Length: 577
Image (cartoon, rainbow, N blue to C red; front, top):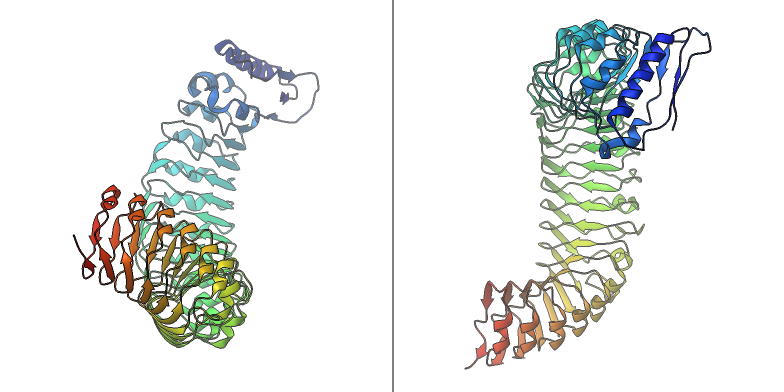
């Protein structure tokens, strides 16, 4: 790629560029350097511009001389307007002499292993409209002189070791459109002067050590579209002035220690598509004004202390794809969500929700992740929960669900995980699902099937052996009868839990075909015959529990080959020897 310099009546600057390039050539024998060309013939009035994208091609394989050495050769380029150096392996530090580049409007040195501090003299470069000094090793504080750069529209100081607080002079940057200042070591309050940045569209201050209350002046940033404040140490409540940010599209405030109720003013943010305030100390109920956020796509509010009912107005958010309210203190019945036909993620686990699920849940045909665990729901699970064949996993353990397992699960080829243990589900295991149907074998992606602690009956379908990815099978604490199917030997199981049923017959010798088995629990059944010596081939097994069955004969010596064994229980059988 060529290196082109266009200049007007500035021969001396072109000479400086050539001198700088030659200094690079003299210091390096790398053949990867491109041809350097400087044109001096045309008499134009255009300022000098450098297109240095070729530097990226050298990258980490050919580190340059220390930054202060080779950069000093271009300090005389007083008409230089653009300097773009990002994505190289430049070392050293930024010299005070950078202020000599008085015509510079664009400076980007991001992504280099530069160190040192930002010189105060940067504040003299009042023509800068874009300053990118992100993703490198600069340290020290942000000097108040930054406020002199009143032409700045973009400022990026992220992913650095900067410390100290944001200076109040930042309020002078009234033309600023984008402010990237995340993943640093800065601390202290967000200055109230931030409210003077009336043209700001993006404010990214996440992953810092900021503290104190959020200034109400943020509410003056009426053009703001992206607000990212997560992973800080704020205190106090969310100011009601946030309701003035009516252009806001993405609002991230998770893991910041804010507390208090969610203001009804949030309903004014009608353009909001992402609202993520999880893992805070929020309290009170969700305001009904949430129903005004009809453009909302992602709503994450898990791990807070919100309580009360989920407002019925949530059902108006027809664009919602992800609703995550798990690990809160929500109570009452689940409102109708039938209009949320785009929903793919619904996490409501670990609340105090109760009542029956609304029948409109069957409308959620795009649902992929469905988790209602650890609540007090009653009634039946939605029969068509996998009607759209999109469901990846369903977990509804530790509720009070009754009735059959949803029939749509039998042909749910997308399913990978099923956890329905700890309910009162009923039905015959070998008949058309309510039950664990033979058609579970069609679930080619199924990795985990846990329906323990229910009231399922019937026998284990041999077709389970046709679920090639199945690794965990837990049907314990039901009322299953019949034999353990030999077809299970074709699986890649690492856990097989069938205890506390009424299974009978012998342990299939094919069990030796489960070399990855870590846990085998067949306790409290009616299994008989001898303990198969093939168990000795399960060298990865950590737990083996055959207690409370009707096994006879002696313990096979091959058990001693199970070198990983930590727990062994053969008690309450009829063993001899």
